[in-house]
Image 1 (spheres, one colour):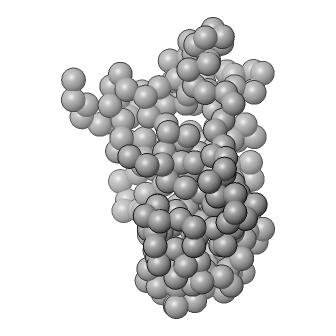
Image 2 (tube, rainbow, N blue to C red):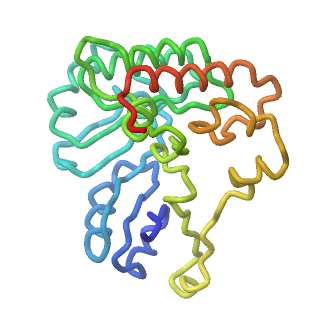
Length: 252
């Protein structure tokens, strides 16, 4: 299976054939252009939009239709303003992933989910682990109807006992599935480098790091290795792992 290519240069698309593409941009004005360019000879996995603005300040267009969009916004904005966007958003194929370093985003993700909008929290070293834990229980144990919240939904769906599950897949960060394709021009496409992380998950075992001995390793794979005090991330990942094992029927 060929990896999914992450690219940022629209000029490269004419040189690619029969590839699955994640196109990264911060420009809403070229969404339709990207979609049309990719679909000529390739398949669009999604357009990933990194934008420094709240969801409520984005001018959503019905012309975007079912183009798969994954938007990384700064935040939600005023709830009353977001509700007015729902009729348009309900017709779109859109997900919103918010940064766990921002306190207001935990409530924002829960609001999005409760209103039926697919969303996620991007877990990083600056996360509030207590708030993440609360969101985890809402995502996996909440009885009221709500849309999926990532990466919890992915972990629940994909988890199997004694197998590794890289929830970086949700955020296009799993090196087993995604390659970042770099090229300066069409002329050097053949020499384009596909960037892989220098530190693979296997290296944690070679180096006998504390991460490799953590019970939550199967769903973390050393994502928070740079954190000196790992008590909070270990507690979180182990609790998440135990919760999934307790609520999901697991095949032996």
